[in-house]
Every structure is written in C-alpha cells, then in structure tokens.
Length: 90
Image 1 (cartoon, one colour):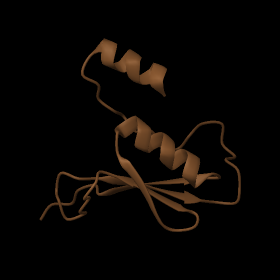
Image 2 (cartoon, rainbow, N blue to C red):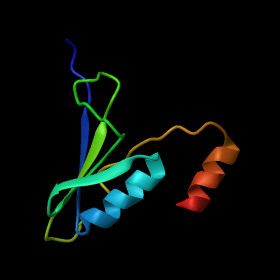
Image 3 (tube, rainbow, N blue to C red):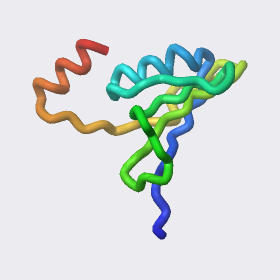
C-alpha cells in the first residue's frame, strides 16, 4: 500500500474557532474527543478510506511567533464565481 495523507494537524490558540472556520469552509462537521482538540471531517469519516482526509486543530498555549502561517491548504473551487462566493461567505 502506498503512503497517503490522512490528517492535517493545525496548532492554534483557539482550536474551537479555527476548527469551526475550516468546517464551514469545507462543508464538513466538527467534533471533539477532549478539551483542546477540535476534529473536522466529513460525516462518517474513516481514516482507512484512501480518498479521505481530515483536519485536527489542537490548542497550544503560546501565540504564533512567525509573521507567516506555516500551514497552507490549497483548495479547488469550481469557478471564479464559486471562489468569490466562498471568500465573501468566509
């Protein structure tokens, strides 16, 4: 079996807010197994499914120190109009 991405892990001061943002952006759901961890994924997510990936946002106590974010997710839209609607909504 080939390696494949299954999880994107993001560190944040407010895991819940960042998790809600990504859930809204992707149209996915939010869950949490424990305080300080927000899980974002499609309903019925199964990490063994080769076509699935999820996002975990984990709370950290220290603020970001770099001026640039260290994680960038490139997302595909269906058209320029779809992209404009998504940006306006978020």
